Length: 149
Image 1 (tube, rainbow, N blue to C red):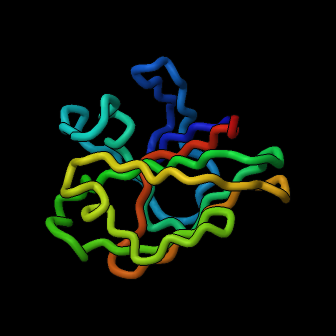
Image 2 (cartoon, rainbow, N blue to C red):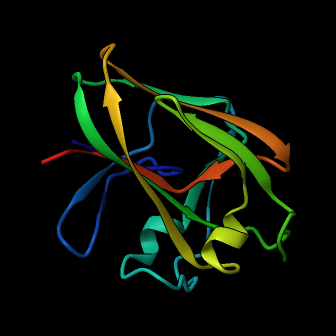
């Protein structure tokens, strides 16, 4: 199992006691942390969505072969995005293609958490996510791979 909180240099512990390791293994882009008092709806762990990595081309880490549930955490917290269609990007996770992904639309507005959850299989000892910008930079707040039971 791996849990990574994007955009931070220190681990994060969520309300269930799970420890999320600090950001690692992103290629390109930059990070930002938002105000610690920023409200984030649709989550009991707003702190998970108050930092992000944006503008990256990929994320990759060595990981044991097997079947997992991937959970990618998003929230549109950039004040320059105020509506649908203002940040649209695509990403691919182990062959699962997500085209024209709009965090604002998926979450139902700004400062609202959204988790994209789906099964993946790792067969080459590596978990890889590639990102491509359509409109504005891709962004992500956190990610986790949990073994399928």
